[in-house]
Length: 521
Image 1 (spheres, helix red, strand yellow):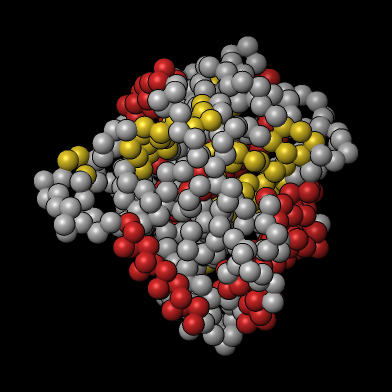
Image 2 (cartoon, helix red, strand yellow):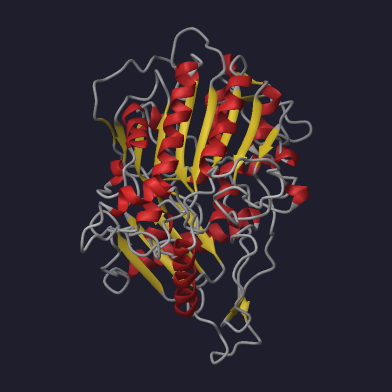
């Protein structure tokens, strides 16, 4: 039987309450926080596209205004070291829905990915869809009576791999595409068949989310609310653009009024969802997650003090704003500094729901218990759950959320055997405690950073700390073997004169953004 937990302990983590203490309840970490069994919780998972770590006020922005997201953070726990499993979108989305590292899924780039036929390395034959053999959160929750809906961006394969084939009862707006042709009606997304002149996509997705909440108020539900915003094309409502144009000051690092307006619309969506939960009287039994799928695009925003942004191997590519609100359990206004990653959501949500879809279970296997065979009071019925979940890589965040323990794993990992205009050449990375090592596959050089002292990754330490660098290299290599990571190979067609390096792509992307800004409604 495999276990998703590592046996080596991390140094003590810090999860602190910044508000008045609340009753956390008794009992084992990971189970009901109250003495009497409660109804199964509802889940709302809000996923924003391309939102950078400092793109919200409660993470340091002084330009973007996000009062509703800030209020959510004040009602829950804010993670300062929350990571996406990849520096681009599709792999992170797959990791959230399955609890598995993109390297294990062989889904390691955004679908369809950038083409670099003359680059030094040839990328592996990776999987451009989420396989039906994988068990999604929706599929794991449905046997427990959950209604499920996917709203907004999907980007995990073509028509045969849409949300409705992956356990979701309802799909609004999700297909193969990674960005909408337009944020204003008509969106030119074929499965959205009706709309009104002037209608804005972020608002429309929120309308549909509210309808789902109303229709399922009396049963447990899982709402996967994945906005297309704030991904390109940059399009926003005129009044909001003008609001932020008036705020721009010379020398500001964050100064794109259209991008700011898109964030404002996302924030309004968060506020509307929270208000709807209150109106329906189900706010206290609904757990809300907030996350981004990769770092902010450097052409649109500044991720400072983090280095670089989307599509890069550095912190700006993967560190994300991450908030979890769990009424009656999570201390309002609490902050957690433990390194956590998007594969952790899967086991967290299943544990909160009182089901376990990530335990190894094969033919002839006896009963499985939450804390071992001696814990007969928590014997689990796994009959509805397929055994594919045995390979889940994530570890439940429940002990951190309850401030009653820490995770048991030793490190978190990344694997990106691709090229990206954001700055990435094929690489792998590992974070263990405060140290992060990046290994670049083209020439196998490594960069080592102490993130506690150097969040901006300015001081490379591999020459000063060769033993630490070698230890982390081995840890990363062993992990790649464990998950079956696909590696790039020498490219027989390598031609430096014909290769299209990221710098050229960056200029092209900047022109596209400018064009979209000039042609917004």
